Structure formats: structure tokens, C-alpha cells
Length: 570
Picture (spheres, rainbow, N blue to C red):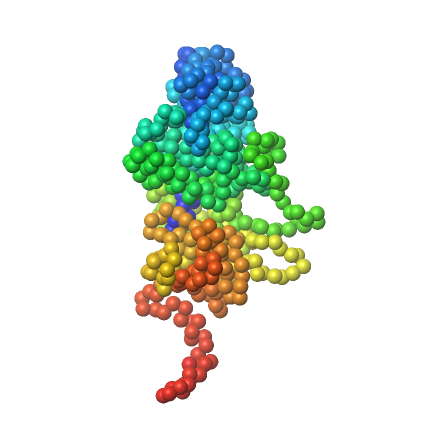
């Protein structure tokens, strides 16, 4: 059941969180010990290649520059710094523009001045001989530094989450990328450095409408990710002039990455990128970061670096309405973790825009989550994902498992509680429920078969498609459920017309009319945006049963058929 892929990463994140305390209590942790001897570090900043920029090393705890640990990228785009013995990490690598600094913008295909206001950093838990400083490391560093995070484990966790969200093909966002300049044509490597360069180029090309595309994307994304959701907002404030479309970011980035790889004629690299870049989850909350970044206060952060600035969110009215407009479906996770006989209460986690699963699918969800965790090299036992209760107000699931990693075993006993949301504006003086889905749809998932395909349809006869309705009214469509690669289409709003709920897929030029009869799901009719009928989705009959038979028998003896040779009641 691919729509529940976020739970896989979530359970994995909670599993690692439950172990983090016992793994980090060693006073001899080498990550935070002082450097035993002077260490040479080669720094490779990249937006493409960056010329003539200064590089310096700071300690994360006090944000002070380490004496002597400085250098310059020169014309070749790399800098070598020497870290003296006795220096204690974690560390910040910071790139400082000079009056002579330039960077090669892959979107423009030329060197551009590197603005003096540009901030480009990477945060390392411990020193490494080679380190890249890129758009991705700045996104992570901005969150780490803004939230005043200083411990090595949290630094590693944030870096890993940003990698998983934006560049899952990479081993680490701290590795050095291949540098791209005007002389690189035809020489992108089919390796980790080349894939990193391709990723950065794809990001830069999303900002092609800007004067400095790579920097515009850098600034927008690092602000967007501060609230752990890719939505074109910082908290409730939206970007005034967004550089990218948050709704289509996944497909847009994938297309740019693929096109860039193909432009160099490196077919193997293109295949690798297309096969590895599964970016469905970046629009959902980045699980595991809420507790790490709990001290981050968005009100205290200046966002002057965002192209176009921000538009304050909230209601435009000046009334005292504190109502529940736009309440979203929320997953709340609580529970305990027991390691070496010691139980601790895990911090409560709240995730928004997570629709409740269909209770009938819990067995398959359990199997998928366990498989995903084990694929990370973690041993899982006694795993269960069991329904506790389900009604209109909430769905409660008990999640239990035992994991073992790094020689440590931990048992977690968690409770997942989903509460529904409501979309649209509400009026306290009315009982209008036209902006809410009926019980026949909300929080439910349907496997439907397409038929009566007409010219112009993007579906074929007999194609099975998964339709999932969140309690807040959003529709998730997966055209290929068997691939288990996530819902490809998300439509957040609907219009109620008679007994139908109309979802307009503006990006692809289609409308989905969801019909509900006698308080039961009936069918989905597909049409163009201009209302030309293209086909119909219905539930497939099983074991010889006729789907929705009760919708017919409910009207027995109601209608009379007359004609030659006929005169009978139906």
C-alpha cells in the first residue's frame, strides 16, 4: 500500500531515536573528542565551481573561527585548510564570498558574480579529509544553526534527512561533488561525484527564471525546509514570488536531473538517476526532525535572503475568529522505549497532512514497514501494527517492535493516533457541510479499474488505479499501485456538484468526478478540463459478486418497464 511509505521512514526514525540515548552516552565518544593531531581538509564548494572565495572552519558550539583553519578556492574551485590539534567538533565549514568571487551557474551556462550576501555552509559531526559545501549542505546547516543544535548525533541526523529528501542517490551530502564549469561538457562521471553534480545542476535549472538561478533555489529551499515541509512557506507565511512550484517540485526536479544527465550523453548516469531518485516523500513532513529542531523559533529568523520575501499568513479578516478553519489530518505518536531494562518516554511527535490508513490494510502496512527497516541493516523482531479503535473522531493503532543495531537492542511500544481534518472556510453561524467529504470517502482508499477509455485519456482499459481520500478532502491517485512507488497525483481541493465531488487536476488537464449514491462510493468519471468524457473508474467485481448491487435492489418494484412484450415492475 504505497501511500503509507512515510510510515516506513517514520518507524525507522523512531527506531533510531529510541537507540540514540544509549548510543550517545559514552563519554569517550570520538566524534566530540578534540583532534589528536593537525588534520588537512580539502573543501569543495559547489553551486557549480566557485572561484576565489574564502573558506574558514568554525566550531559549532560557539560559532568561533578556528585559528589558522582558513583558505581560498582560487581558480580551481577547491581550498585546503589545516585544522590544528586540540580542536573540538562538531564543525562548520563556511564559504565567504570576496569581491573577486564567481560561480558557474549550470542554468545560465556561464560564470556569474557570487553575491556578497551568499551564505554557503556545511556542518560536520567530525572532520573528514574531503568535504563538499553545496545547496544541500546549506539547507541542513541553516536548520542546524538556526535551532542551535550542537551535538554530533543530531548533526548527522539532519544531514541524513536532507539527503533522503532531496538526494537519496547519494551516500552523503558532505561528500565532494564533481565541479562543473564551462570546460566540463561531456565529462560528467557516472559515480557519486557525478550524480551529486547532476543533482545540483537539476536544482539550479529549476530557478532558470531568476538572475542567479542556483542562488535563488538555494535561498528558497533552505527557508522552505525550516518547518520540515516543502510547501513554499515558512510556517504560515508564503513566498511572495516563489522560484519553484511546490506542488510540482518532485516531477520538475526529476525531469531536470534526467535532462541534464542526457545532455552529456551519459546514458548509464541517466538510468541510475531515474532509478534512484524517488522523491515522493519530500512534500511530506520530514520525520524525525521535530524533536531535533524543537528550539527553532521561526519568528526570530530573518528571511531577507528569500527572493521576493514572504507574505504573512493567517486570516485576512480582522475579526476574532480563532476557529478551526483548515484543520488538517494529524498523526500523533507517543510511547516508550526500553533499552537494557530502562524505559524512557519518547517525545510526542505530531505530523500534519498524514491521512489515516484503511484499517483493512494494516497487515500489509506492517509488512512493508518491517521490510523497509530491515533494508537499513537493522534487525527487527516482534513487530506488530494492530488496530486499537476506529471511529469518526480518530483511528488508533498500536505499534510495537524490537530492533538491534550496533550491538544494542531496544524495544518500543508506541501509539499512533490519527485525527481527521476539515478543509475550507467554516462559518460558525451555519451548518453547511458542502466543503467536507462524506463518510463514504473520507479517510478511505479504493482500488478501481478503468474502462471505456476514450482518445486523450492517460489511462488504459483494465488499468487498476488507487484512489485515496484524506479526511481533510485531499485526493491521492496512484496510477500503478503494484509498483509501490508512491502516489503520483495529489489534488488538495474539490467542488461539490450534486452528488459528485469534482477534483480538478489543473497540472494535467483532467477532472475527476467522484460519485456517491445512497451514502456509498459509486464511481469516478474522468473528463478533460473542458468536460469531455474520457472514461470511468469502478470497483472490480470479485467472486462473481456484483459491486454496489444494493444500489439497484434498493429500488426494487419502483420502476415499471412497458413495451412490446413487456409490462413488469422492476
